[in-house]
Image (cartoon, rainbow, N blue to C red; front, side, top):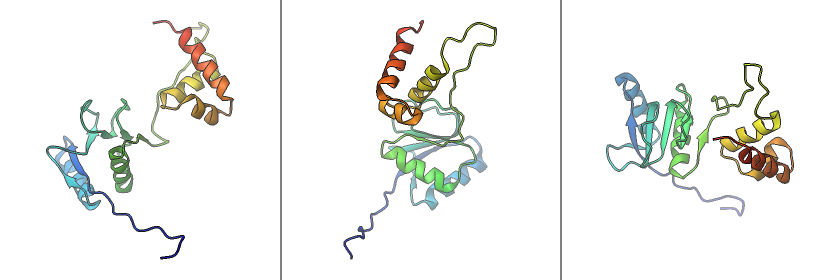
Length: 163
């Protein structure tokens, strides 16, 4: 083995709990799980794969297919590929959060009734990035602003928010 090559890493086998109401979809997702070398588990799962909206708020991390983005470990579109599902399951088991760029995310829009918007466009961008789970430093990088500006803007938003 040369100095540049890394030793082959063994791929983890995960125990996946599957929740899918449609029997045909359930069978297809089971085939994807097994084809990726994972096991379908009924108890003590490493990750839960849910077709539709997530019902698992506690316990193992959850990856949803076509469900609402409710803070679960993974959110993929209903038509995600087998490779995307496998990657999301592995990432969720490793403690990572998975989202695809095309998946709709919460946004902040101006009021339609003619009132002045509560947030400036920059404040909306900063808050949207924070909602994506970014730190002030990461927000600054994403928006091309200083970390101080990011911190100041987020602090201003939270200090003037009305409960």
